[in-house]
Image (cartoon, rainbow, N blue to C red; front, side, top):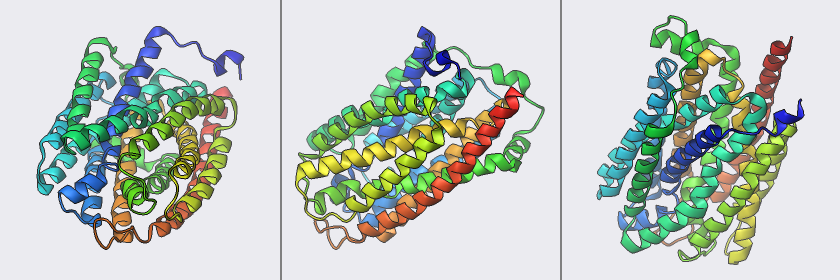
Length: 414
C-alpha cells in the first residue's frame, strides 16, 4: 500500500464533510443514547416497569428498521445531500416531539416518529463516505465520524443529565433538537450535491432494486454480521444506568463524571483505532477488540456494590473494546456493496441494525427483573453471557465479511 494511502491529506471540503457527518452522528446517537441515562428518571417519574421502558427504547429501533427497508429501494435514486437533509429534518421534528411528550403513549409515538427519520441517517452517511473516500482511507474517516459516539458522552450526556435533573427528562430532547437545527442549516448551505452514483444506475423499480440487493450472497453475509453486531451491542445499553445506580450504588451526581471520563477515552481511542485499522488488517483489530470486550463484560456484569473509581476503570476498559470493534467493522461493511447499490445496501444494513437493536432491548427488558424502583436489577449477568455468545458469532461472521472485501480488492487490481 502506498505511504500516502495510509496518511491522506484531506482537503478543506473533505474535512467539512467529515465534520458534518460526525455532527449528524453525534445528534442521532445522543438522541438514542440519552434514553439510557434518563432511564432511571423516566421509570420513576412515569412509573414505568423495565419491560415498558424497554418498549420505549425498542419503539425507536423498530420504526427505524421498518423505515430503512421502505427507503432502501429509493436510496440510490436521489442526490445523497437531499436525502440526508430530508431525513435529518424529520429527525429534528421528532426529537422536538419527544421534548413535549408528557405521557407514556405520547412518548412512544414520539420515539416512533424520531426512529422513522433518524434510523436512515447513519446509512446515508455511510454511503456518502463510501462515495467520497476509498477503502484504504475509510478506517481513518470512520474513526473521526464515529467520534460522535464519544462526543455524545463527553458533552451530550453530562449536559443532558444536568438539565434533566434541573428541568425534567424532556429537556435533553429539546437540546438535541436545537443543535440539530444548526447542523441542518450547515448541510443546506455548505454541503455539495452527491450524484455520481446516479449516472450508473440501472433501470429498476424500487422494489426490484431492493430485491436485487437482497439477492446477492455477499450482501447477505454483510447483513447477517450486522444483525449479531447490533444485538450484542444493544443488549446491555438500556439498563446500564439502572444497573450502575441500583446494583453498583453509583449516585446520580456521579453519573456525569462517569460518562465524561468514558467519553474522553472514546475520543482518544477512535481516531487511533481508525488509523491503525488502515495500517493493519481490519479484521485482526476487530478480533482482538472483541476478545477484550468479552473479558471485560464478563467481569462488569457480575459486579455488586463497587467503589466509584473501580467502576470508572472497568468502564474505560469496556469502552476500549466496544469502540475498537465499531471502527473496523463499519469500514469493512462499506467495502461490500458495489457503487450503484451502496444506498440500498446501507439502508437495509441500517434497518437490520435498528430492528436487531430493538429485539435486543426488548429481550433485555424481559430478562432483567426488578422488584421495585430502588431494588437491584436481577439477571443482569445473564445479559452478559448472552452478549458473549453473540460476540463469538460476530467474530466468525466478520471474518467472512473480511474475505469478501479482500476478494473484491484483489479483483480490482487484476
